[in-house]
Length: 291
Image 1 (cartoon, rainbow, N blue to C red):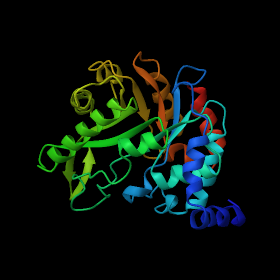
Image 2 (cartoon, rainbow, N blue to C red):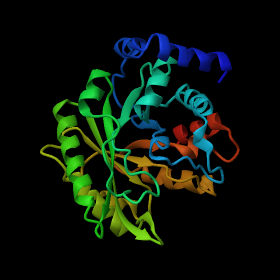
Image 3 (cartoon, helix red, strand yellow):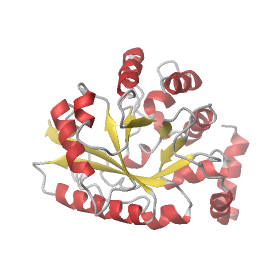
Image 4 (cartoon, rainbow, N blue to C red):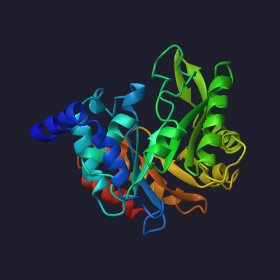
């Protein structure tokens, strides 16, 4: 991003903060969450707010906001990309840059479970709420639900997610639930990516709230995906996870999972924004081609 563009963004925030709400009100909303190919292709960029800045062997990859915005704008400009997932600071920058026209905008809601924090499982809602998403005319909200059977703080996060599902459904906005079964390993929270664990998370995540009319699931691609997603009729988007050492193998796994009837697209972040060769356009186009 050119220095003058960066200065303009900050100057707008200082001198005309109301420009953000104006851009949100004037933004062209998408007719559907799905693209012409019948699938969603959403770029995820909500990692920084949880202190998760690593991508592959770059521990502070996402710490440079101008670089991240460059990568996001390049990805969102590619044919077939339908939307973006981020916290308010990122989505508002993209609004001011005009990068959200016709795109699905999903706001990230609970970012309080900071990576490596002693309270990580107590994943507080420190980002968007349903009222804020509705006022910005965004299309939905996403929440992370890590279910740690050995940590009683899980119950508070689970209850907060259920309330968020209720509020989003009432507002007619997509409630995107990202559930995991988690454990503590060597003092760190780790998600269990075995098929049985992910299938159990699907069953639990699908049952949140008083209605699921607008609820979607965001799930990792694991072994036996057909069995994993069989536990729910809710629409599913696949997450990309950590940067793969073998991107071709990752693409092949995504392609297979996309054939399943309830799988409606991809929500991928670091794997596309920070590919090993730094070719963001190439990585995004390859992912879109899988749809």
